[in-house]
Amino acid sequence: MNDLLFYPNFDNVYFGFVITDTEYKIIEYNEGFMYFINEPDNNIRNKKLTYYFPDMDKTIFKQYKISADCNKDYCIKANIINFGGKKHYLFFFADFSIKYKLIDQIKYLNEQVYLHNEMFNKLKDGIYITDEKGKTLYVNDSFVNLSGLPRELLVGRTVYKLIKEKILPNSCCAKIINDKAEVSTINNYYEGQKCLVSGSPIFDSNNRFKRTIAVVRDVSELDLLMKEIAKEETLSLSYAKKINTNDKMNSDEQFVSENKRMKGIYKRAKKLANFDSTVLILGETGVGKDFLASYIHNNSSRSQTGSLIKINCAAIPEHLLESELFGYEEGAFTGTQKGGKRGLFEEANDGTLFLDEIGDMPYTLQVKLLNVINDRKFYRLGSTKATKFNARIISATNANIEKLIEEKKFRADLYYRLNVININIPPLRERKEDILLLARSFLEYYNNKFEKSSFFSSDILEVFLFYSWPGNIREMENLIERLVLISDKACIDASTFQEQVSNKHKADLLKHKGATSINKKLTLKEQINMFEKSVIQKTLSESNTLKEAAEELGIHISTLVRKKQSYDI
Ligand SMILES: Nc1ncnc2c1ncn2[C@@H]1O[C@H](COP(=O)(O)OP(=O)(O)OP(=O)(O)O)[C@@H](O)[C@H]1O
Image 1 (cartoon, rainbow, N blue to C red):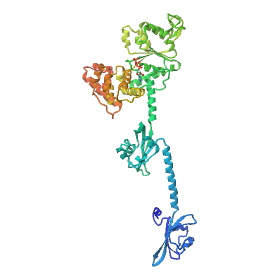
Image 2: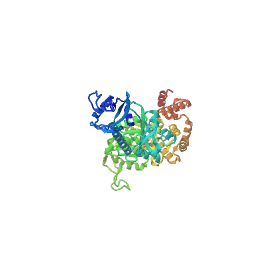
Image 3: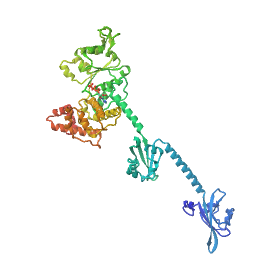
Image 4: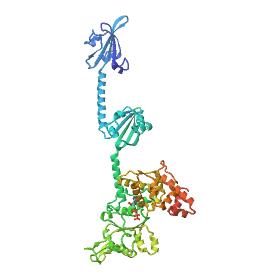
């Protein structure tokens, strides 16, 4: 009779009783009984029960089943009772067809559970489900494979126990239960699998928290891929000029800077890329003058028609410079090659000519260069036939050209001709936002290159910000390459860095040591601002005049005044 526990009361249509006399004449019945006899007339007293159930076995009063015409499966249980001093029969009727429906539904549900299991197990992602108390209800095959943890170790146990036993030290489900919100974690499972775990709380239809579900995705491959991409990007970033300057730079991805002024410079450079005006790029050594020249060329239509030809005016011996630039005809001088030689000016036709270290161009050649730019033509050495010159000229120097002009080492007319558009790249120490950004990008690049997994300690990042970086980005790149190579431990700290810095700059570092500390709750920008403010305050307090402080900080006095005002010092 346990099945009948499904029925809430005697009047339920699925449960009926009837009392008859010993002749089966109906004396009493409940409403539920009407369901079994399918009788429209509600008044059936005095009718015979056998009229409705002709097949009834009148002799055996025990539980048995009959099938009625309406295809219902009944269970009838009969008892003999004493009613008003007389013997009566009491019949209970139960409709078991509901039971079969339930059995069908259970079968269906079991099938669904099986299919869900099959589907969950076919997923590449791991699935982990707990109840609201953190008890592990389900893990799919992928989770078992990804985590390397046997199912028996997990199912039925709470995530808190698993955390305690260090089986799942970083359980995402425990965090979901705590936050009742979506949670994402990165977990490292056995054999170094790095997994992204995204979990959600599950609520029932009354909005009661019931389950947690976590989806575990193996991102090791993705991570590797990202590293590869980062490596490629850094490669092209660092070696842009060394690899293929003809490639059109379609995006600004390679340019690394968070500094407002730098962003302005690159924005301007992009705009002027398609005008042919000469550009003079100024800036200390290693600030990115070459890099900017490549950027301008790559963003110009000239990158489609010609090459970026770079001439380092300081590197080519003076006596060779002229022939290198203009080329020569066969027999122009002894030792010429057969058929003559194209000069770099010719190579740059339809492209861009980048004259690096223009301040070092020999004075005698300066006038020739000026003539080429003015006349848009030149002559190969030993030739009287003019060659058309059609290249955009970008020049760069870290020298103080105005001083060179005063000293009569540089022609003023050439300077004005080259200086139609002037771009001054600030040194790294004046754009502290870029220091950590670039440092991390170089670290990533050299980690990949040397297959290392070095990382920076927070104290080294602090020191990076203090350091004046006299050699700018190039110095940083070389230094980080060295640090990654020489560091025995994975963590590169301030002391390793200080060992690599020259004594002169070591003193610099010691002077500033301890002026600030890293606060992980602040954004990078806020920390840099805090740091900058403290450095300016300290320098101002140690200087007699603003000019002296500006010199000490290596910035222009107007910059110092502006920063003083903005930091309310
Ligand atoms: N904005 C930038 N983002 C990423 N890397 C950069 C950036 N600017 C420069 N670099 C890298 O910094 C290094 C030095 O840059 P670059 O050679 O352009 O400097 P430079 O000013 O021309 O130096 P020099 O005066 O010695 O010729 C290069 O490896 C370059 O790829």
